[in-house]
Amino acid sequence: MIANALIQHAGPLWDEATRAPFLEALAAGTLPVEAFDRWLAQDYLFAKDLTAFQALLLAKAPRACHKALVGGLGALDKELDWFESHARQLQVDLDIPPHATCRRYTDFLLRCAHTEVFPVLIAVLFGVEASYLAAWSAFAPAGRYAEFIARWSSADFAAYVQALGGLADHHPHEAAQQHFNRVLVHEREFWKMSWQA
Picture 1: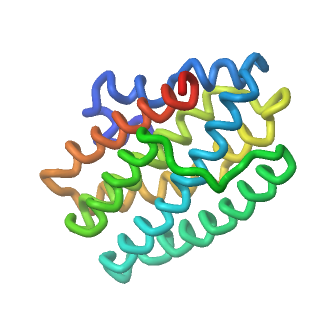
Picture 2: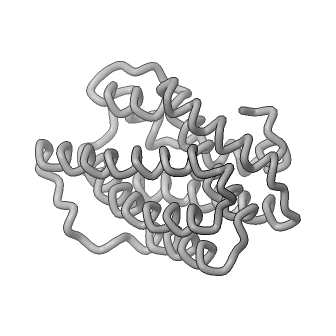
């Protein structure tokens, strides 16, 4: 994945988006419960809006790109069910307003979905998913949150991200890097929000 040109040209933003005190504390078992609960609720709200983004991206996609994108939408729908199940078990309220940081991120995604062309949108989605894979893959699935680490560092998720990277490579656009980098800024701020509130 590191060989992807969008990642290579992102500079320090890549590390800023994929390394965070929140994740280090989660992996070490020292994450405060309130920080985890905040992340869980806000990431759920993010995933709901990401579903809308991906549906609009699919509507703009060439037919040859549909298989990976349809599969991604199906997986995201199952992920929302998974979030809801865990939130019930952990007694985390999902019926809350998005944090301003989450709202800025999803506003960016939805604005892009309505105004940008497919090659830019696939770079955006690749940025979202590739940075998430890299962030979680830095840790072994162990401890209280092993299931969460395993979910976003799995071989299946990695294969999906690789497929998105291939689509981005095959549909370059002069604005792709700029939008990819903006995703990384939003990812960096989302981790900070989850850690610091």
